[in-house]
Image (tube, rainbow, N blue to C red; front, side, top):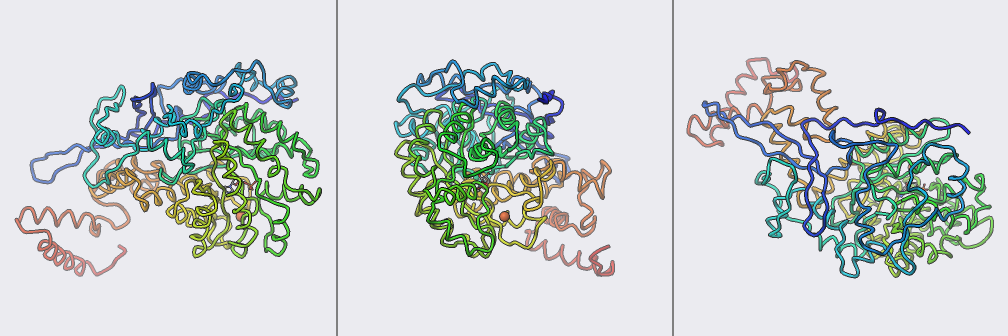
Length: 627
Ligand code: IRN
Ligand code: FE2
């Protein structure tokens, strides 16, 4: 067998973001340190002739990049990340550490494989709930317990520690951090998320915290419509083009640009090892579609799948630490004929596998008939359900049809069963849906699935732009996010065309960050707008570097600016190459304000005068817009 080379630290992206550093906020209820990113800003020059300046306080942002962007973090991919949750988990005293892996396949891999990846010493000893115990966050939440994970999330979601303290009379503190007492400008909506609010949302099933007890490396996050809208990035090899090494880097890369969760959709022969690598080195929750690996085990023959084999696969992956499973249990035998007249039939991979199995055996989907047994596995490790939309529409013509909504009703029925076992559950959604049909999706999901979080793939709002489907889908994603979808599954520019490369992954993630943030603004999430305000203020004051540093993708912003004005001086110039020095509206407004201050007239009056002057200048220069 070919041995995969273990990547050394060098291949993993570790560059910190410009003008940024990691800060850690200490918990109040638990011994936790919540990681965030702080962007420092330059001063504002006050134009009053005295050369005075005014400081701009640093901006703290939600950070998914994990320790990779922290130059002080000691990272060795051969060891995996620091197991920060391990103590939280063992302190609850409801888990046992097993002597060995209990899935047959996992044991076999361990015995057969000479792959370096299996050197992780603790791999042989996964955690599992003690007999009869349930270790899901929903279970704790319903018992009224605020876990360390919940407090972590409350601090993280707020971003603005000053407001949290003010509202709670608490004293959350930033550790090893010189700028105590943040203040972030006046025009930000006030609001806060408390640890108790996190608990109550999880208890109600309106939010989930994907956090397998065997993935102690993750930094807890929450998926729910009363929190920041999250995004998922799919990664996965194809046998031909990718190595394990590249897969780990792809995960780290996706997190760097803002992926809140990663789904490992790997297929092929080293799937177990690939997943181990990714989980051990991932600061974000990992999801999988276990039926893919089960299919691999029966050499791609869907009809050969059995419940026993699937069950073993679930245990194998749960013991590795997968945080959520896509389970296509809603693809019922009776729905399959409803897809016959569709333009694109069944487009879900998992959905088509289950449909094929159902038809071959003329039996009900075994994921449906064994659902309660699946629940027993989920609660022993705290794996969350992502109930798959195996019948989602694959084109505009098929949107909102009977097959799609029939399955959605079944997913609602399964949600109730999962909740009976206190299993955290999210619901997967479409797909391809034109804008005017999007709202109905959200309304029906809320109604049928009792407000369990919705997690959609886009939706793509048109089919005519292959090569640009990150955009066709971000339009739908922004809309459905605004309507209440909790997590958006990204689509890359390569969708429908090929396997995404590194650039595609970044483009997909940034595009979805935009959709998610646009939805957060529209929903009025407390704290969402302050970054916009800080960036706009920097833009207006021609603090170019600050504008780059506050942006989602500082590298590209700077690169584009450099393309036409590469000189260092241009980074302090009061114009850019778009309008040039004479026609910058922001410059004109500033001139007007200064003029008004000097003249002692009000801005309105000055504007009249100033605009008249500019109009004269414009006419004199020949009234050309593009010089
Ligand atoms: C998200 C919402 N609906 C589907 N998804 C994602 O699509 C799902 O979580 C998985 O990552 C991917 C492929 O799923 P299928 O094609 O097996 O359904
Ligand atoms: Fe599609």
